[in-house]
Image (cartoon, rainbow, N blue to C red; front, side, top):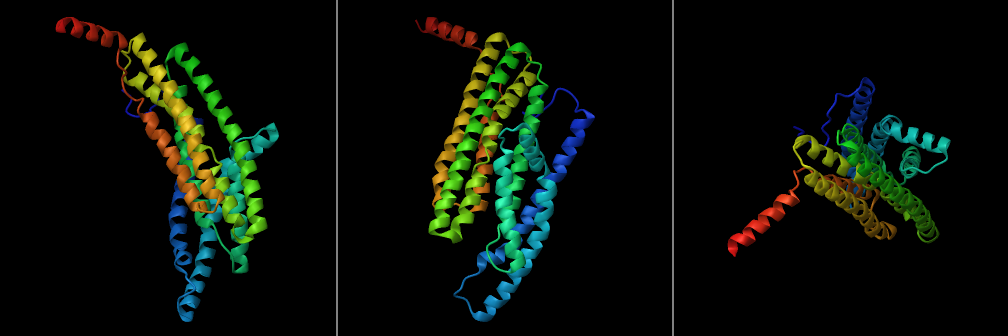
Length: 323
């Protein structure tokens, strides 16, 4: 019996095992670097101009050292942990199509390059905590997605489940593509406005909007629901046709809930980032929260559905008994 919506009915191939190990190494590196960089960023959060001059000098020196330490930890995250993102950008360019790797790569570059220059020059804002947090949360969401897709591929649900999978995945990908186009255009327009009015805040707003333009929750919507359906079929092989019909109907409903719920979440939080109320690290956290909500909602499908035929028979029997 399947114990998880990520359970497989087959062993992983050598290529899949190798890919999984690399994903876990990248994921572990990103999370370790994120936690350490967040600690290094603490002096910058504590700095206030109202303090004594000697205290400010010590704190500025600590911030200088911590920025260099953060840079050293962020470089392997950008170059190694985020390597699948750069591969995705290369594939998207060669195929002349837009994928979610485009806004992800743009977000990383827009946050990392100015931070590196600020560290070298010794002044300016740095966003290493946002970069490492974004990559860690992104890789976590993508690991969920990969396991979910492998789970769906392993399903022995027959032609009926196959007919359910493809339209939902196509619809999810279409919505994510349109969202990326709109979000990128809006992000650069709003950042341009900030650059003309308050240029010191333009980069922070742009990075936050670009981080929020990553449709991780949208990409998870269909695979997670279908993985939960697969787990239910594997856990309860004695399902009859009526129960399968109920399960597949619930799968469509939950998938659409995840898809458009994540879209509404992005639309509602985007104005907060546009006015500067959402920092880049908070935008990464919001992205992770929306992805987690998709996983939790999809998990509701991992249960044996009620038999409508039995329910109707029970209702008729109860009505006769009462009469």
